[in-house]
Image (tube, rainbow, N blue to C red; front, side, top):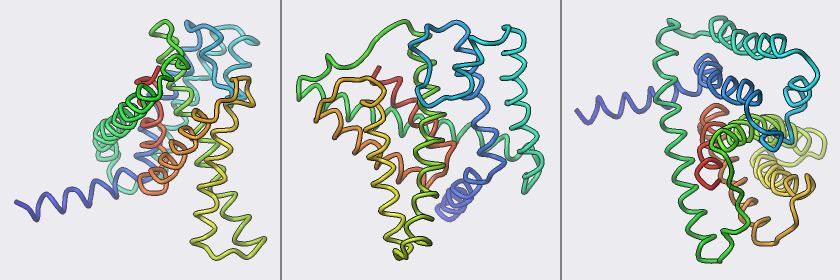
Length: 233
């Protein structure tokens, strides 16, 4: 029984990192954020989303919905193209992956809320209608992880290792730190008043998300970020 469980867990870790499973796991997050923008207020728009936030105001609703559905369908076709095993198997691994991600996010959120409560800083958190909180969280998980983890970490690693000649392991560590600093600082550059404690805890959260990204991949980190944001909002 122990051997079977260990084999299942090993398979789970591998299958949930596969590109086909990753693409399928991201689809609900894409639709939640993309279609949610139609009913949420403007404050729910992600500051690093340079496509949907402009399209939702610039094109007719039918065209906007068609675009979001096309993105979702494109991800499904990508999963079909990159499937390493029968498609239904990738689909089955998607739901436990989302569940794991939400557990990571809610656990981290509980820790952050406890620390902020102890520091009497809960007043800096933003509340609002449920739909706004859901859309804000989905957008943050999807787009911030795309920009600050999926894009920034490989690019900074490549820059440090190939251009400057930093050893590969040190380059990855440097990329984690740089991407986390950018992640924390971007919130204040977007207009949020600077607070050293908030900057520091976001830096730490960024490092945690970066490590989770390196270990578990993009989809699980994006969902974990979304669950984390929803819990603290």
